[in-house]
Length: 539
Figure 1 (tube, rainbow, N blue to C red):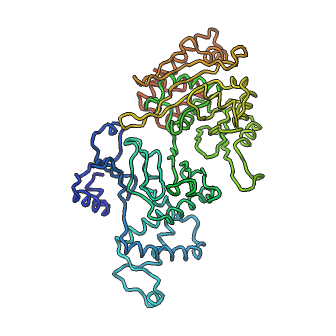
Figure 2 (spheres, helix red, strand yellow):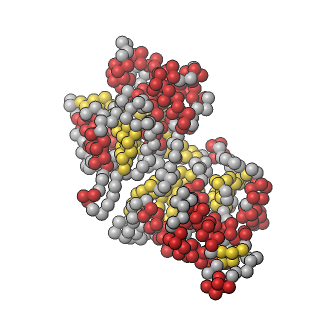
Figure 3 (cartoon, helix red, strand yellow):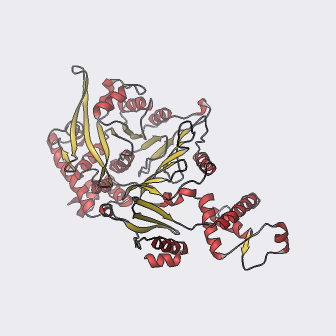
């Protein structure tokens, strides 16, 4: 599809382009998809589709970079008609509840819409005129009004176009200001969408919170939850707390998260780091992925899970479902919030429950409180644990673990084997995420009064390169994994590391980075070892 075809199929698109050019704008280029190198463009003026009939126009003007949603728009007259139509549909809906449950909800709305409207060229019946019920509409009005109805009643409402845009990471709304987004290619940009009234914002926020099962009120103004597509949403409701008005942030969810070869391709990790983590997770090491908010901790955690043997049993415990496990034997546990304390199910409870099922790996979505103590108890009893954490260095991580409210005794910290640290950086308008270091936790030293650690990988921000500083000096590889592999000479482990690095690099070079194909490779490896990996990837 090119721009002319898009305008031919979508009249609202033609209207928008003509209006844009009429106000002095240059005709934009049309792109079916975006690429990373577009971030380096000095001037941007492009349109891309996110699913009919929605298009996104990103362009630069004298104010700055703009993000315009192009979608069917209603006139004032159509808005008034839509209110009448919506009220009648909601009135009729309960009487049509016996309709076939297999019928899609959007199809039901369309059928009810036709019941309460009639074509403008037809005359209403005497009964309809007497009741003043049916609304006369043109074919073009029907198209626009149906889109608005389905968007507001079934889909994501005002922010539906933003939820559909695959290039967005975050959506941020504060009061009645224009909604801002974090774009994977173009960084932080302001959109042309905003709530028109406090009532509209209030209805949206409260309705969304209830659908997430986390009702928000003045007495409980801050909630976290998950949208139907898995995206994570944080709401701040009360004006006492959020002075700019009710606000929310949505972190977009990947149904099929990026893989480790994809992260290597993006530069988050090096191929050798990936091979190292492959060895660690295959042989049951426990690790924490740590870093600031939005540094990609959960993305990294999800990507690493393919390295765990596919015959293993995995349990995950989370407040908000974000972990995606490709293994067949996976038990997903989610906390439950309620006004009754005795009915609450907290993360601590889930971790304790997981222990009773004797899983090979326990994944804790994010450690913030006493569940951290339970996670270390799990490691002490031989269960491998993976989790995310907020800390910028290994020293600060240990301080947080040993202080309130987690309170893990410092002599227990060496039950954790590894700590990964991630950073988010902005370079030439682009968002980059990098694993800045991998630290090995060696042991507790009573003499030195603390934990001995060793930096095994570190990132040079000037050259944007990762360096392996643990060659012939890795405690985890030589003293933990080499014995499990039955290696007579522990230094031989580095030959195995090189072999796995080569496999990862070949996967990147051959474009084997998609979720399904990457897991197919590691599923075959779990069955037959290196022989299960295609020859072209073994090198």
